[in-house]
Image (cartoon, rainbow, N blue to C red; front, top):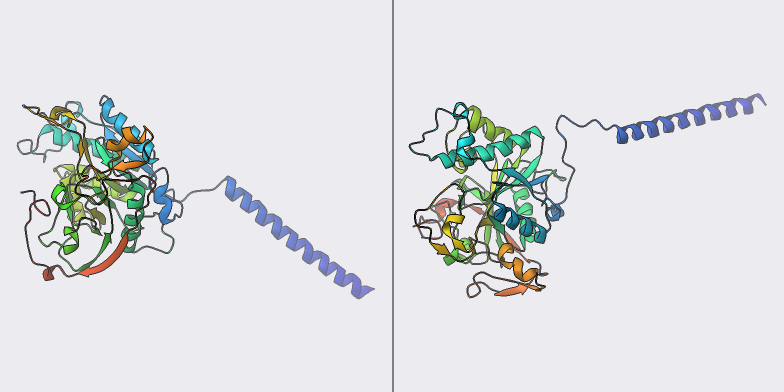
Length: 391
C-alpha cells in the first residue's frame, strides 16, 4: 500500500506539473497574439515570389506623385490600377513658389537647374520622408503620368525571381524582390550596369518587349549584349546608374539614405541624377540598386496638345500629338476603352512590329530565363541610336 500511494503521489505531481506547463504555454501564446510587441521596425511578413500579384504588387505600399488639380492624370492612374487590380495612394506635387527660400540648399545652382527641377526634387523627398515617418518597409513610387503593360504582374513575377537571385537573400525573403536591395529602377529612360564582370539574367520569349526601332529608353553602357537587339528579351542586372524616375521602388533604409544625401548633405542635383549617383556608390554606400531593361513602366501621353504633357515645363509652340506610351506594348491606358467595352483581347500599340497585334487578355507570359556571367571587355564598344544612344 505504501509503495502504491507513493507511486500515485509521484504520478499526481508529474501530471500537475505537466498541466501547469501547458497552461503557462497557452497563456503566453494568447498574450503574444494579443499583445505582440514589434521589433524596432515593423517586420514585413515572410512572402513568396507570387505576392507580386497582390493589391500592392509585392510592396507594402504603392504611391503616385502628382498635383491634386491634375484630375485627368489621377483619373488615368485610378482606371489603370483598377484594371490591373492594385491600390495606389497619392502624394502631392510641389510648386517652387511654395518652397521657403531658407529650405533650399545654397549648393543648388539655379543658373544650371530650373526652378521646376527643384520642385520635382522636393516632391520626391516629401514622399520619402513620409515613408520614413510611417516606417514603411518597401514602396513602389510612380509619377502621375505613368503607364504599364496589361501583363504587368507576369513581368513583376519574372523580375522578382531574377532580382532576388542576384542578391544575398535568405531561403525565406521578407520581400519577393529579395532582402538586400535599396532601390529597384523599374521605369526609366536610361539604365545599365557598371563595367565589372557580373551575372545578368536575360528574360526571353517576352511578347511585351518594345521593338528595337520604337524604344525610348536606352542601355546605359557602351557595350551592348547581343540579347538586347532581340525584340523579345529583357535584362535584369545590378544597376549602376540611370535617368528618369517614371517608377522606382525603395526600402525604408533606402529612403533614409536618399534623404540624408540629398537634403542633409545637400547633393544639389535633379532627383534622378542624385539617385543615379547613389546607385554608383557615390554617397552612403552600400546603396544596392537593381533594374530591368527595357523598362516595365513608362510615361503616357494623352492625345492632344503637348502643353498638357508636363506640369513642370511649358512649351511656346504646343504641337498636338496622338496618344502614346513609351516602351509599353499592351498599354493598360490605351486598352482601357476596349477592355471596359467587354473586349477579350488587348491590342499592341505597334501592331505591325510586335509578335501579336492582339492577344487574349487571359494569356500568361511564358518567359525563359538565361543567366550569363558577362565580361564586358569581351563585347566591342558601339554606339547605336535608339539602343544605347539618344542620337
